[in-house]
Length: 247
Image (cartoon, rainbow, N blue to C red; front, side):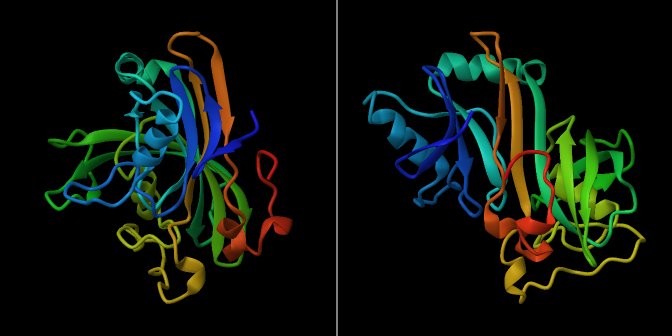
């Protein structure tokens, strides 16, 4: 389904109960506690209320503030409850694109690890089954290898906090521009992101595909959101890259 543009929004899907939109990098899905800054939730609610003054967005899932791409909202509490209750059954695919540091060794692979969050909100890998840890599984495919960077498509089997960022750092290929996990947690050679480089001014992670069974219509909804043109600048731009969908 081609996107359409509403006020401040790039909309990929909309019906009476759901709306899927593109989130810009740097915009939080929900404003941090105590902050009055505008967030994606505010923009979606404003859009809904132009047609239904009593309507509002309902958050179903989130992506990191510094990640761009697809986010799905419910338009009412009943739909939100149904989606959150059956999320693992209804969602069939969640894919991301990432530019990571170094040349990926494998064309494709599967990362399984156990993640735990500390008191400061940082997530780290721990031993299997450790107290308060959660299993995280990511499938990846290498789409392009540059001199010092690679473009990777990642599909989530689980949806843990900072899952991709922690796991890619753990195998020695941290996501480019990641200020928190930009160092390698692996013995493989890796370097810290060069934050002074303007190409690294953002986190190079983009939520690019979402497929799910509609909770009421029971039909499969398949959405794709190519990254913005600037996303591929570190790799030389679109002309050098073959993506799994039209750019």
